[in-house]
Image 1 (cartoon, rainbow, N blue to C red):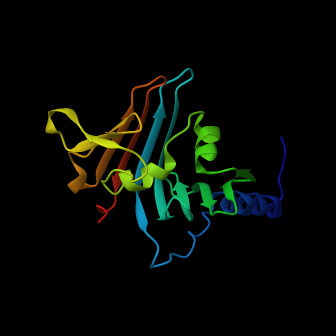
Image 2: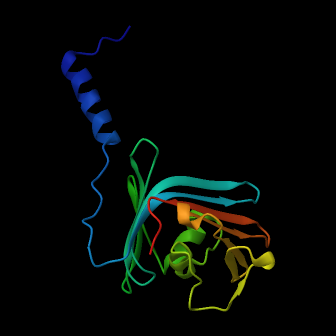
Length: 179
């Protein structure tokens, strides 16, 4: 039997508590666009890749920060981007990428239309590509090979799906519908 002195137990507890601590979210710029809620991304490939987290998104496709947190409130990842750099920080590591699309491709194994996603979460097509209304006059639109469904946008729900191999779905529940 191993006997651990009291100071050793206290040090172990302190290390565990520190490991579980959640860094504070970056200060919020009241002039920058802001969204928060829950986000789920699923890539139906072998193997299936899925991420579900709470998110805080501040900024736009050109400059901003996005923090993903676990259901227990621990920070899973923080992405920061600007014209100068795109950086992903996860517990114990930091990586640089050419842009947000490369970051998503490395993290999920699949490219996502990140510039468009900022507008999609606000319930509107991205101005950088042609959009068509969904069939059957359903609320939403098709853009960049994705169907963005907005049937429950007034409740803060956005559902984007791409059928092309591999199928990918992005679902968001916003804490409050965006203007």
